[in-house]
Image 1 (tube, helix red, strand yellow):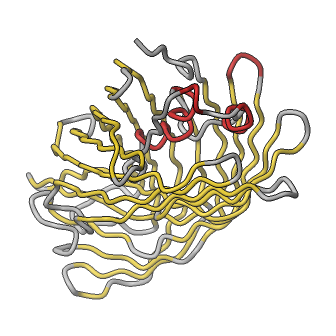
Image 2 (cartoon, helix red, strand yellow):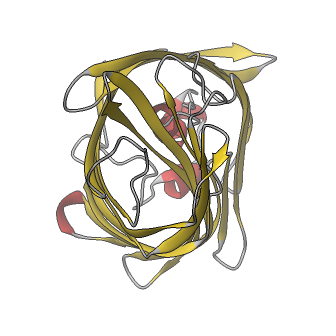
Image 3 (cartoon, helix red, strand yellow):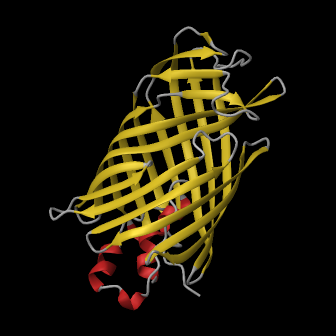
Length: 324
């Protein structure tokens, strides 16, 4: 059971990833075990990365009034996160996800009218407790997960959020793995309260692997050299942080679509180095008061695509937790 469970375990640590495979170990063919023994796990126990986005233009409006064209002269970001198992049993798992993000944003003109400096540094953190339960439904493996999380800045804790998911493993063999599910978000500021989840991994005869996790990513990847892997495609990410102006708390939120190439290299001692480069599209950025929803914004911008690169390193000391 624990071998196939590792196949889908990384999904449990991401907002749209909530999947753990559970079957009896004796029923797993040796070829499946070899296929799952990946040098590059999707979820990294400890991860640090740096992102630089080249300058880009954007148009914006403030409270329904158009603003002059503006430019982001510099966008830099440092992320650090940890995924830690607390308890792993035969039918359930308790874990935590810890995230920190530092964003430095330098624009030609202030983002909000009340803002004084043009360059600002923002700190954002979130902490989540995840509970996953494995069962059977329609003679298929089913995974149910509940997540409670808090987030905030260096000044305050700001929001309490919740999420529940249900996922069904439709197929899992040495070549193809398919999962389908739903995620529901308990958060009045969320843009989409219910989101479908679809996962597909298909191994082709030429060594390429199609890796799809909707709505997060669509990649095609291949192992190269002795310890390397290259991936081509698109990944989705987001940036969110809190802004304090005139005794009010605002939230900055944008979705980022990164398209390009990723190279990963397995280093010694469970370390993995990663380099990403390509084009980042951020179709829409909004700022809204914390007590309001994403659609009730005070500031909105439409951004031009820009070149980005990302470099990171991860360490996986908890990659093989014991089953008690």
